[in-house]
Each structure stands twice: as structure tokens, then as C-alpha cells.
Image (cartoon, rainbow, N blue to C red; front, side, top):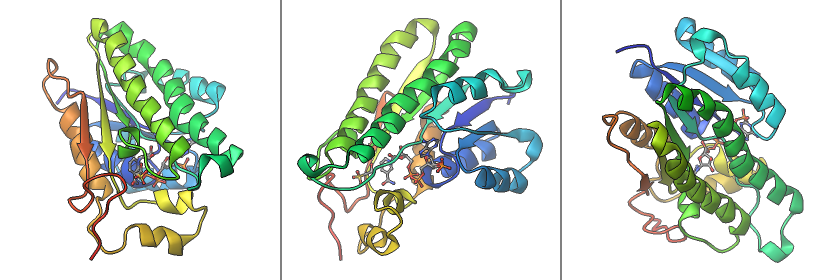
Length: 250
Ligand code: NDP
Ligand code: 8X3
């Protein structure tokens, strides 16, 4: 395989870490990003360091994003696949009791952060007339569940932006897809419940949840289709979760 590069945002944990591992195993050189430098360092140490480049930045900070992408060494600039995975949910409550800081963080990360990274990286893809952007949405971007309001809105925005990007980038030969997972056991619920690990564990109790590798498999499937094939979207659920708010637990 010719040298191919995948950049994965939010690669320090969960779905992003699984995507990084999968692309690496499939022969890609990988650019891993996140805010936790120590985790990025540990990942580089566990792999062939000539095939991994790490960038530590917060996707919410537009100038940090631009600096990180524009400052890539020449041999890392030609990104073939961008996996926009960094994201989070904070809290579960009605909108009328909602925490405004939570709303800002979710919208800034899941929507604006994804836009900042995509804008910065798409310029090179457009110039080279090749590239693939794969966004990680959510079943929360296809359905709405009680108390999910702003997180669901942010993921509906990811769904809409995936369509917009596909329309606007097609003439340059680029592909855009989105993967919408149901419940995947990661650090997601620990983050949502702000470190309450007992509450987080309950989310995944009594049924077989998805794991990061299930989503990485779908993302890699999209990326590995022939160049004339674009998988627009995939919705991937645990068998026991037929819709967002229904989970059959034993
Ligand atoms: P994790 O909490 O395990 O991972 C989230 C990743 O996002 C981390 O690597 C984190 O890195 C990164 N991240 C969060 N905020 C920022 C930020 N401001 N700047 C840069 N990186 C950031 O959760 P998941 O792996 O589950 O989540 C990944 C994506 O999948 C999210 O978009 C989530 O909404 C989506 N998703 C998750 C589902 C699930 O059930 N788990 C289901 C459907 C969708 P760091 O903290 O180092 O910055
Ligand atoms: C994460 C899935 O249903 O917990 O996006 O919101 S859900």
C-alpha cells in the first residue's frame, strides 16, 4: 500500500483509540489527537513511532486547531482520512433545568470543534482532489430521547453537517460519511456523569453493549471502499437496543 495517513480526533480514549489502532493495523500512518498529552505519549510509545504523529489540542479552540494542522511537518500534511470523533455529552436533564455551561461545552466540542478541524483539513484535500471525512455522529443524531435535548441537537447537527460537507466536497472528488452508534462502552458515561463511575457503569449493565472496535470496524469499512463508492451513513446499534431509549436488559 502507498503511504496513507489517517487523522483521528479524540484518539486518547474509546472509539477514537479503537479507530487509531485499526487504521494503524491496516497499514495507515496515523495522526492521533486529544487534550491529554500523557495518553498520546503512551500510545506513541506502544507503536512504531515513525508511523504515529501526535497533536495535542482542544478542538474548541479555533486558533489551536489551525496552528496544529498548519504546523504539521511536510511528510504528515497529506491526510487521506479524517475521522471526526472528539465529542462528549454532559448531564441528563430537561432543557428547562439545563446547565448552560454543559450546553456550551457540548455545542462547542461536538459541532464547532468538528467544523474547525474539518475546515482546516479540507483545504489540503480539496487541493489534492482526494480525501475522506468520516464523522462520528450518534443514534442521538437520528432520534431524540428524554433529557438528551442539547446532546441530541448537537448530534443532529453532525448529521446535517455530514450531508452539507458531502454536497460541498463532492465536486473535488472527496467522500464524506457518518457513523451513528448506539451504546458503546467507553469513558463516555463517566464524562457525562462527571466522574460518577457507579452511575456510568449502570448504563452498560445487563446487555451486550457495543465496544470501540465495533465502530472502528464500520469506519474502516467506509474508508476501504473503492474511491467511486461513498457510504453515506451507517447506524450501528447493540442488538438489545432497537432504538435510542429502549434497552432490553437481562
Ligand atoms: P470517550 O470519552 O471515551 O472519548 C472521547 C474522546 O474525545 C477522548 O479522546 C477525548 O480526548 C476527546 N475529546 C473530548 N473533548 C475534546 C476536546 N474539547 N478537544 C479534543 N478532544 C476532545 O467517549 P467515546 O469514545 O464514546 O466518544 C467518541 C465519540 O463517539 C463522541 O463524539 C461521542 O459523542 C460519540 N458517541 C459515543 C457513543 C457511546 O455510547 N459511547 C455512542 C454514539 C456516539 P481528551 O479528553 O484527551 O481531549
Ligand atoms: C451516545 C449514545 O444514546 O447515550 O451518543 O446518547 S446515547
